Length: 117
Image 1 (cartoon, rainbow, N blue to C red):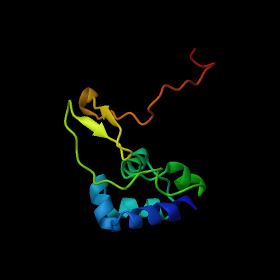
Image 2: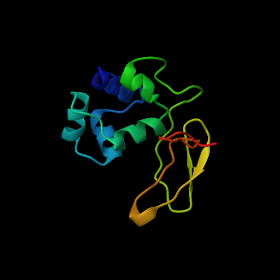
Image 3: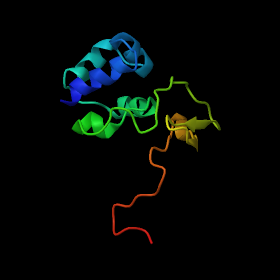
């Protein structure tokens, strides 16, 4: 079950529920609901990716928990014009539109239509 793997991932990263909820800037009671099967919001997934957790493992229980050649990294808030460093060591520029934070997750273009030539 995905909720159980979320708990395993959090524990393997060395966080208590309270610490992880603070990292996510949410109430601990809200985070507990995720581990009880209440769905996992995008915000949690982004932090897990930052920490090197393979989302394929999280959702399917296939493969390894950690992304290949990744070690969990500590989360550091970024500022405008900073570079975002993925757990794999690749860097991406950070853009902050309208006070939000945009972090590219895929390193290549993808298409929902017939594809790009």
